[in-house]
Length: 159
Image (tube, rainbow, N blue to C red):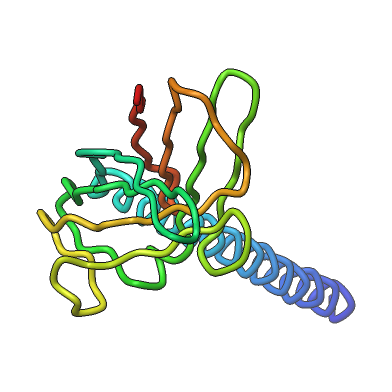
């Protein structure tokens, strides 16, 4: 009789420990799933709030050569930080060549100037981007600008 009680007690304790382990495992998985859902929702929200419009592209000439000036308007519903601006991708493409241009200096680069120099590309503000490419391109030239979150705009420069 006593041995039956001890056996039942051991089985009960083992069952409680097993149930607790299963509960901890499930809660940690729910936490991971919740984190993934939050990150995904934030990414989708960022994309929905972001929108660009290339207003004008012109080819300018200076003593150092030719460069494109691209006027881009923030038509989204959120401001874009200077850190995001500097991580944008700029592409120039004609019928035979595609050029990826990073922000910075050197060959095939771009820089920018805000119409309101406050470090933030506000909603409705137009950004002036100067692109310096070492490769000659022939019109029509496709200009594509892409934010770090994947939202972009395209313009065809015909000369």
